[in-house]
Image 1 (cartoon, rainbow, N blue to C red):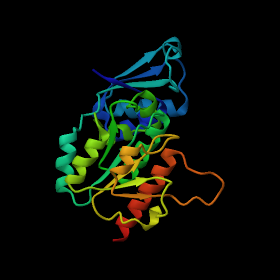
Image 2 (image 1 turned 60 degrees about the vertical axis):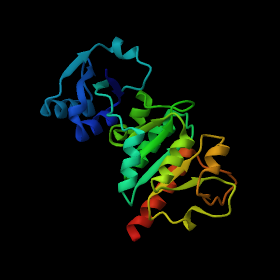
Image 3 (image 1 turned 135 degrees about the vertical axis):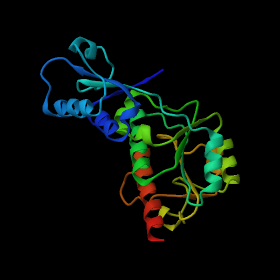
Image 4 (image 1 turned 30 degrees about the vertical axis):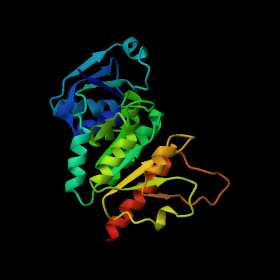
Length: 243
């Protein structure tokens, strides 16, 4: 069993971080541009198997491939029980819950932000949510391999179990006067983000310990979920670095 990754930047990042996960890299036949030539040299130095395939093979792909794709080992599964054990023993745990985020570009961007600030794990529901697919991997630029993703059957039940393990759950929602910058993110935190357009579902919102909002000064009522997640995660990082 394997997964596919497409695009120069995503595969460059994987070569840098986890070359041992790569089964082989396929490059388009013909003259390579400077970035693909550099990628080929890097792969050869690391002993990664390289194949040259005709353009017709790449034309059949439903992805922006930039003339390169990689066959990789699937991400090692991190189960819900593993996460509960981790939170129980880590006083600075940081877990991100995504309540039915469905756009692969959003999940990919969120993975990049999560990697940048050191999120311990992202929890997503099994149903009505996007999982890690080639588009997510490409947008994530290697973060899909570095950030633990925990897929659960019931998001609310998982939130409750992790609350019992010590997480303080903070949900982002517009219907509160308390802002993101008034919350305390210095302990074990679970940040809960809602879906595109609809935000947090009622039960998800009700099981948060606290709701906060990102201040909005203009005419737009809300931010894209990946942008909002990035803003919130960097406030968590700012507070933790200043302690």
